[in-house]
Length: 255
Image 1 (cartoon, rainbow, N blue to C red):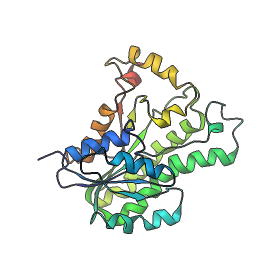
Image 2 (image 1 turned 30 degrees about the vertical axis):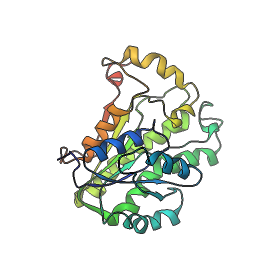
Image 3 (image 1 turned 60 degrees about the horizontal axis):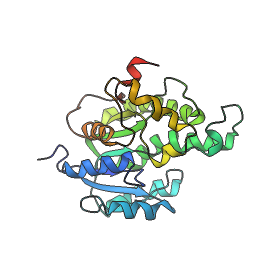
C-alpha cells in the first residue's frame, strides 16, 4: 500500500519532465494515486506528451486559471476521469517579462495584474472550482518561493508569492470547517521552464548549494515533490495554513 493509495489527485503546472509538478505527479502515481493533469492552449500538447512518460499516462484536462469559463467547466471535465478529488496541487505561476528584473516602479498595472491574477488569485479560484469534488480530509497544496524577503530580479512575482502565502492562510481558515487542509511548499531554486524566465536565475544557482546546510541541487525536483506528496497524504492530518520550507536549509541561515 502506497502513501497515497486510492487517492484521486489533480496536478497542475506539468509542462516538462523537469517541472516540480511532473516530479510530484510521478511520485504520487508511484504511491498509489490516480492522477489527472491540467494544461491549456499551446502548452497542452507539451503536457500530453510528457504525461506519456508518467506511469499509466494520466489524462490531461483543459484549464486556463484566468478563464472563468474553464474554471466553471473544470468539475465536469474532471468528472470524465475521477468521481471526486482527495488532493489538488497548484503549481501555477506566471509574470510577463516586464514584471521581472526591472524593479516595481516601471511595471504597468496590466502586467503586474497579470502576475497577480495567474500566480495569486488563481490559488483561490482553483480551490473554488475544485470545491464540489473535494472529499472530507482532502489536501490542497501550492508552491511558493520564500516571500519574506526581496529577491534580486523577482519583483512582481515576489509580490505575487507574498499574496499567495497570505491567501494560503485565508483559504485554510475558509476550507478548514470542511476538513480540507491547505498548505504551501516553499521550494529552493529548481531549474524549471518557469525559472528560466527569471532574469539572473543563475545567481541563485551559484550560491544556494554552498550556503544551504544540507546542500542543494537545482536539477533535482524530487525533494520538493516528496514534501508535496507527504502533505497530500494522511500523515499531516492537523497541519493547515502552513508553509513548509524545502530549500536545503538556506532560509534558516540567511546570507
